[in-house]
Image 1 (cartoon, rainbow, N blue to C red):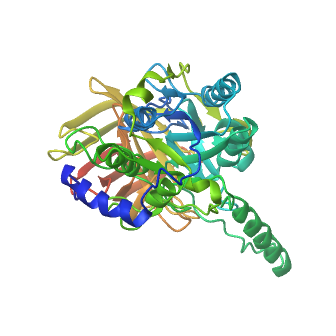
Image 2: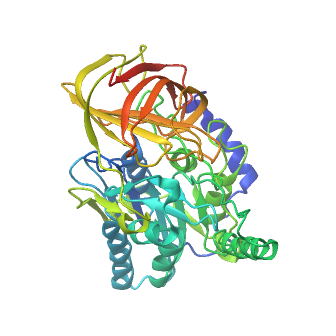
Length: 480
């Protein structure tokens, strides 16, 4: 990955000339800017069995803090910074309360032209029908496959873009909603044999309407860090390349805000949205995705660094941490059946990674003894064990429609995020997991009992995290 260093501000100067110079004498009145900035770095850990959780996001807290403090330095009248910790998980209610609190602040200030800049760095998921986007709070746990959870279940446990936009609109302020997260899901397949051709076409038409609604073609921008059905990865801090990484839109915002501060200038709403979605502003991150429609208000400025001392004295940034202490299992009643109970059998597991490999930290992980085995569905086996290095899990899943049987399975993706014809897998533990994964595994021997229980398994597996060259590889033997 290439790195952008401090001299890039020279390039930013060119960017601002393209975006348009700000003319203080003729510019419209500035917005009264308020900030809600949320970082969900930490996620609840599942206790085992069929319950699953989300991985830690190194840099989500930092991203939220960078955006909040830089906007405050640029004259924001106040705001809320909500971050997470291992025992302070950000909940759904925490996020909604932050929006309500900023609305109360705006009302108390009797702000004339308020604009809320809402930023969140978190996990993000979607569904393949209407491409609803859901920001995932830190307390989120689930059973089965993430891609199988329905919209109603996700709506009650996460925060849809539509819900956030609605709550922001209810404050009476204009807003910019910046969703710095994955938009991951697999497209729905409407070609079901039991449906007629007319029914299929009707479903496709409804899906198209829903997808258009989730594009938010409106004057208040809703900005996604990636396209529907894709993932977003943390990237290098543009100002301190050796420091903790940041989320992709945080990087772009940092470049825009730091560039304006360096030259003692301003940024309009148009500057910010254009910079986030530009194909040229940053070679490290893809352009943001938005279908927002400009109006005259976009010429008003959002950040003003000409009078930094004055803006600092007006600072009212309330810092909060999440209130969640443990995870909550989503969608237990929507899975169409109970998850397979975990079995305890004797087995041997060994895996290791080379120097720099993220999951193992370059260590060799060995275990022989009682392991927990679960089968969330016919295509999947999950092995769990604990040793002095932590709690570990290996999940191996053959393509949908297949059953566990000897064979080689290549081009595996992250478990729970596979298309119907893809294998998936994951090796997680010690608080670490991959967001983006490519791997392969082979079943050299498999024996399934009459009741569906796993009696024997001999499997080899390997994976690469986040597109790196570092390799994790290992072997599991059960019942031999």
